[in-house]
Length: 299
Image 1: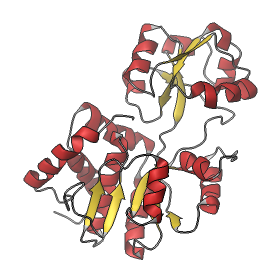
Image 2 (image 1 turned 30 degrees about the vertical axis):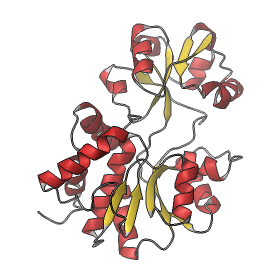
Image 3 (image 1 turned 90 degrees about the vertical axis):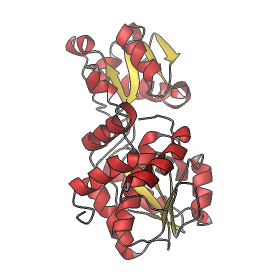
Image 4 (image 1 turned 60 degrees about the horizontal axis):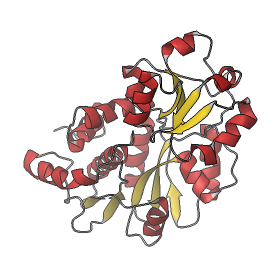
């Protein structure tokens, strides 16, 4: 999910103050706490930050703050280095590529193993979740039923189709998909980054192949079919906490690892639906997740 949430933070703080939610600690973006969790400007990041905050408070952390959108990965890394942030939810593949631009790792196991090796001193990567939010190529059901189920199937017929995706597709993936799968699309159109413009274009038939994300509720809602990336072009993007070393106690590290152990792609997709489509308060969504997995003390 890639829903911008900058404007929501002020409202969330007010909701938290009035609803008695046990996850509500310090006001978001307010006074600095002992543990400061960074969140990016997408809804999924905010949800994960609130889940982390609830788990940490349940582990005994007394002053936990979720900070409003903190900027680019470069800004986040600097903030972790100077410990103005304690922890951020991140994505294994993107994080590895930031620290090692030459990496060729693609599978969840290889990406995570290399990430743990490449992360600089002063940082700690905790356990990764099974949940991924990674790029997918999706098509409408009728095209899948015509025999296109994998990227290799697509590669044989790419010249028939118009592709829609983010602006950086051509610079990052155009050569890769040609090399791995022999795929050269008839046309590459910039739509948006896995959002409503891409979905609408695929539904209408203006494009026939789209780049969406694995936690997008639009895939199931519209009957789109994700293609199997049978040569692992897209790297794994498992959810992983990146921590400023020394800012969390062993008990607090264990609390976040327990969150990662139970977070699946299907459940993350459902959490995104509750926040982005049902417009639910992320504090309530986070609390229900933690209670469902026995990660909060009984009310």
